[in-house]
Amino acid sequence: MTDREPLRIEIMVEPEGQGLELPAYATEGSAGMDLRAAIEDEITIAPGERYLVSCGFRMALPEGYEAQVRPRSGLAVRHGITLLNAPGTIDSDYRGTVSVIVANLGHAPFVLQRGERVAQMVIAPVVRARLEPVEELPDTERGEGGFGHTGRQ
Image 1 (cartoon, rainbow, N blue to C red):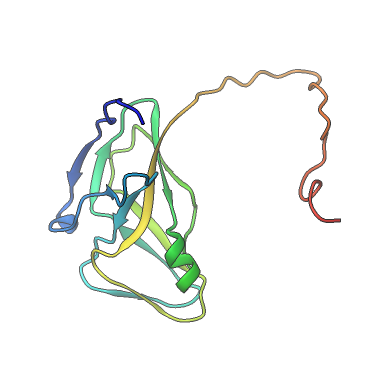
Image 2: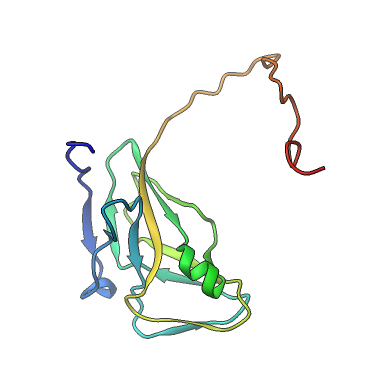
């Protein structure tokens, strides 16, 4: 357990988000905050289709942090609903409306209701890297093996 003060993130509710719950952690141990569909009416997403869904808010992440937007496991396993570009990254200098690209990979149309939990958002620190060109990389046991190299034969 930590006594650290939670990270302060300024949030501005958009007109389509009025009356919806703000992003929030469902439980004390949740890593991600639930994001809700800020849509006017229900929408039906047919199998194979995708839809850009507003979450009804903008935010100001502190420099040195990002927000990762991820699918909800329950929607994925029960209905084949996922997010394209997942995890999506929201940069600290972005000030537009937070939206998610919902895709139906299932076999049946999916009806998304206003206010339904559609995604989750994880706030994470960002490590900036400096790439340094070299002539040779250090050896490892794995070497160049990839794409199933350590899996089934």
